Length: 399
Image (cartoon, rainbow, N blue to C red; front, top):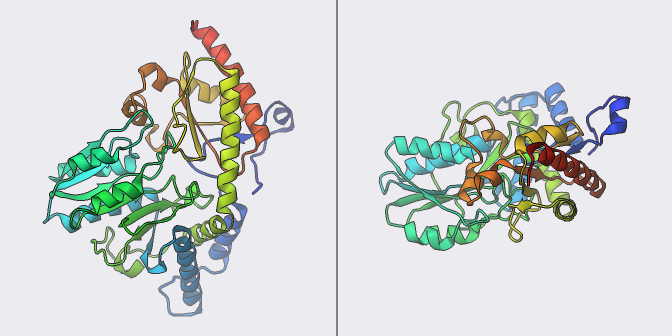
């Protein structure tokens, strides 16, 4: 996809640019950017307008909806455009709870969800709903048996993410959805933001709502979609001019919508190859780090893990310091979710829920991949991580 950041000539000789924070955001593809520029410069009509420019915009939005639906294996009419994962999740939770509030008051989610789920759940509790937070095992995975144990006739909504954004753990959402649907009128939602483009995604009949986000698949930030199963009626989150069949009012952000559609088109055409490439570079990095650096803990599960995420604790190190040390070498990683990096609470709630010790949480670093990464980059990362860890351990007088 090209377009790597510019380094001055002197700096370029010293470093290699390696972006490994793709779970936070991916680089927008050049094709997506060109598509959006076309919409902003020339095809700038309002899709609700009746003249030629409006009709042109409307047709383009329909094509973007078709491409997005195709990438999820659902009908065009069931896809609604949003501003991203946060809006999609909020719409699903508040809409689902509101639609079923006369039948019950219990909502079920997991302890390792993204803040875009956990914060709405806390608001639902303030509104009088009861929320059950399912625990996870050492791999950060929800147990189907645990869900069965808390399912009652009072449950109205279950929301469990498809892939965990910090560990890469693939949750058994298909099985969890089947369990939920054994109870009358229970709505099942999954946050698939980290699964879209990272797994061969296929929405199943038991899933009522699915959230996706554009900037995780080389699309634009501020774009996303919510799948709503045909026949499911939930109140709209945004009221106004009646766009998106009255479900999500507001003049469509046509450039973002078309960018999302273009990214979905690319995903349909080369998604399998992307997944293969991510798995290849992840395996190379993992092998290198395990063979070169002692006293590390691999937090991502060995099986049932997305190829896009590798979470490792470097004992005797602080993840945040390691992050900035690697940044000086042109390597960009993270210590967890970008959306929760400014919170005051100590350490990752995901890693704590998975049972990691304070030392393991403090030394955790997340490497997240895209198909733009190469095996050669991983060799460079291994060398620089090894040097940084050794220097830090000497300074900290680790063992």
